[in-house]
Amino acid sequence: MKPLAIKALGIITGITSLALQAADVEIKDQYARAVPAVSTNSAAFLTITNKGKEDIKLVSADSDIADRVELHGHKHEGNMMRMFKLDDIDLPAGKTEALKSGGSHIMLMGLKKPMKAGDQVDITLHFSDGDAVDVNVPVKDLSEQTKDTAHGSAMKDSKMDHSSMDHSSMKH
Image (cartoon, rainbow, N blue to C red; front, side, top):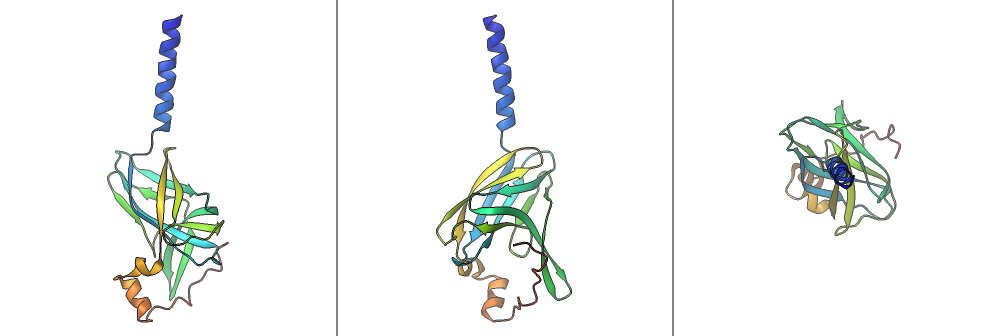
């Protein structure tokens, strides 16, 4: 009976470790936007490479820093940039997806404490295959993020108009 119990334990242990295995993804270039203490929302950005042989999706994220964490996208409609909630983000096998400002990103809504440059935020990414990956995300100042970028140059030269952005459909 003991050998059978040992074999059963080995099978259960194998199944458990298989279920706890992290998604076959590589996360790089992660950062979250520092915001003033009065701000209740921020965003996180990163690059995900699906190193697996199967297509998967990023289906959600969560973090203790915020009441709600959602996947969001942007699209241009006429002269307006609209932000909208995404159900998921496709991660084709062998491909890389950049979650970036002006594109798909992670919204942190209802911040529980200020996010200032130099802080670290923990975010858990959940994938369609049931796996989850914990990511430690440094918080960076906006001026560091936009340095030498087209968006940063436009902001500095006052060529970018954010007054037409429509956030009316957002619940944050």
